[in-house]
View: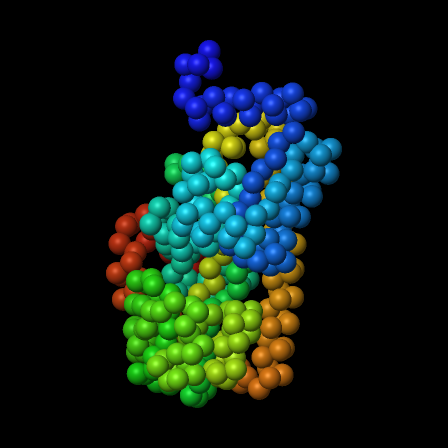
Length: 325
């Protein structure tokens, strides 16, 4: 019978037979681009520990951190193909594949971290997780990735007027570019590794990111003014290959989903500690942190939403998210 199968199919059958003879042990390969010790990496490790405990060692997770299995765009395709079982990915790379992820990537869609969690932990979050399934993926849980804010080398930013004409590095994203331009500043897409020297030499005035990135990339050395406008509070998502999911029994599927949900608290706890530590470090080193009135910033996003949210279904999703208290 095996002679009638392709080599890949025969290999898959052989692997299945070996797993059966080994007592049906299941080892799930999980990818993350973040380094070892990062909160998302440790959260998936914790998920693996929970699964081992709850299945007497029958289900395990091997976590491949530091982009060992590839960058996010590549690992998404590998996960859809079933080569990778689990994948922790930022929302951005999914924007072209899963339209609903574009909404939670919009600037100021979340008023605060508490608002984001209220949305993503509830009915709307479950609805967005379900939207991954038609694309060969099963959405399991969301992890925090902090709030992105502006920082610069010139001055405190307390209002929209302070931003006018300033040059900020952004990721290569139409939404990011349009956001900065709508605020009256100039968006300058460039690789992350070039930001330090670009600020230092005056090519740009600043950039935007969360506290841990601002601190660990040492951008705080050349951009002492951090404005806590929190324009993006975008969760990250843990997904599983649909083909891997379908090989599990309904009971094991429930165990995997619950372990993923249970790992969220550990990730959030570690992320909050990391944020506090990074903020404390940059303040001790002389960074000036201010909190502007965000409402004028939010009001300036109307043309960005009009341009990037044209589908009635997504417009309704925006309204429902904004209505969550």
